[in-house]
Image (cartoon, rainbow, N blue to C red; front, side, top):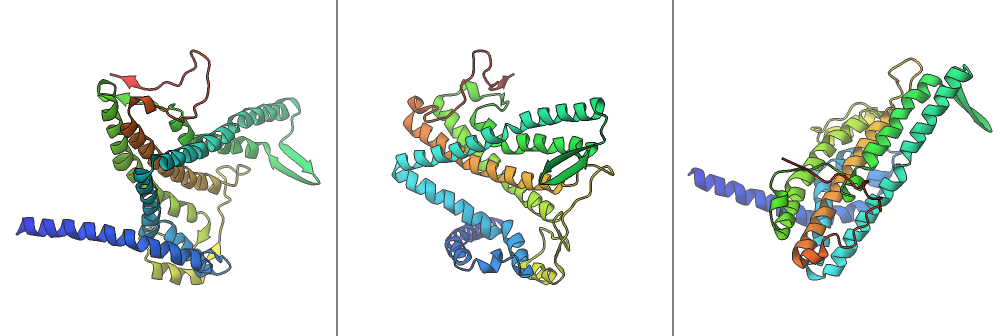
Length: 306
């Protein structure tokens, strides 16, 4: 009896997944043909729909189905899948290389803060381009965290593409090339993608609770969200941790959402690359991979062996 119930539960789960994959085409088409229902932010109900669907099962299946379609086409024509890999890795590299300059801006701004505070003895920094904009020194000092957050959040996928993350290697180096690619594919499907999905669910609503009131929750159904729209108003979080400190901490929460989205995209990209290298063999390792050229002795630390 228990085995029958378990078998029925598995079949029911598979049917639910297939049904949502099939419905994703309709849901995407409806969203494209009715943009005002979720993009017309002059309507509070549309804002609530945007928030609800931004972390919904419907959106997840639309995105997953999109990548599954890309993979299905790639099974038929590998050159197409290589093009997808090149394009997505170019996107991750471009974003990371651009925002890596935030590290330089952070250093330069810290130097300016020291000079203004210690040499010129000024309590504030004023930038004048027609309309002067001035903030207290403590505001600029705390704002340095934003540059650091940009480097961490927006360069994370780039670092992964460049092979710069530390790996704890227990069995990976001892197995064959194709076994490594299988491990990489399984890691993408069962670790990176689920982890990114779970974090997205929390960070999405965490972000919106700093932008609007009344607060929204992941457990709120759509009808409850639409009821809350009656009392909706923008309430952007501008409270600093110190009296004259940085007042745009909501930007950190937005960066978290962007970071998780890029991790999700990179997980699929890594799965595609691992599959292609598995099929084509060792001669395809690192094929079309755009890694930065570094001097001898400056190579990224690849993994730690125990």
